[in-house]
Image (tube, rainbow, N blue to C red; front, side, top):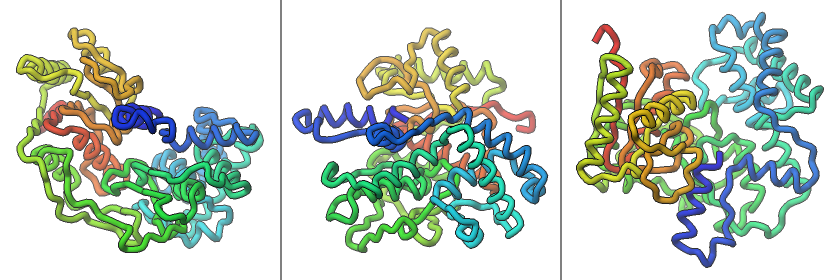
Length: 392
């Protein structure tokens, strides 16, 4: 993902143009790919093809096993392999059989873990036969390269934002760039905003943080009180993994900015939802607000595309969030919540389309966290709309 690094690069250049050339802003996978090309390591990242190969492996090896009895979508097992097995760099079945699967809520018995490992093995063979790599492979290859030939003093320090959404191998790779040198590695993250399955602890990554060098941030300077209250209501009492060895349930947060606005709209149908969102944008502009300070965020890319089309038809200028680089403009930013991670806007609109957030299963918990992320992109006001169900 390039949006956040390029926005941060733009903002940094405004703050310190004379030192901009000394700081590299990038996503981890993009950096890893560049290193592998620099070192001449053959790599063929093909997400679509690797997914096809997984689907074939599922049909031939996974579907008729104990995994099918758990009534989970094949996506779950794809995530299990990418985030847990390959994301932790596991190479032997014994490592997986006794693993505490941080961040995963579905318990697996031995028969299920055996089946996962068989599926992983078949998928890995299929990848190798076609010379294809998936995103987890890219990080593993890069980590092996850095360990084989360290980068020396190429980087004085590494600052990592949104660390909760990296895999264990990803964090090990970042740690390998600077080792344990003083002030070499700064990790910033929030387990409540983890929107990808799986997880890890710092101790598993081989990173020891002395107490004096670890800080829990308890003051929220971004979000107005009404906005953060709306976000907190979404999570409720959910616990979460926060890089430590035990789950956390959060704690008291000081809200620095009082006031704000949180609006919830239950529309009769899709047309009414569109009309309500457009009316809110126009009212904001009519009262002196800048549409360029607003964002419409969705769960999927296809939903974002539909809303860009809808706003264009209503005469509201939009900018695809994928093309946003931090420059001021008068167009409403439209994109997915995941692409907006790490960004902020004065006003955020969240038109929801049936995302299941009410259960205790893993998918529902992740959906709640994603909605939490979307709400907390708003500094001053958040608008949350959905089509009311017939029972309401």
